Image (tube, rainbow, N blue to C red; front, side):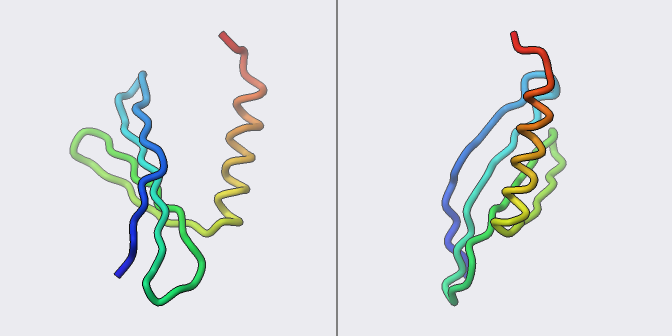
Length: 71
């Protein structure tokens, strides 16, 4: 059994997708995982990643965002 803690919920304006970030902590212990749930109408994509992978992904997203024009 896992304890699920909601972290963020974002609605993407252009496509209407809903992205939810949740922390998973298993009762048996071990590292926490980041669950990402993406909902597109009735379709869901769910995956869980470790802290190191989350850091790499987040840094890649930030690098991309910084190269785009700001409003």
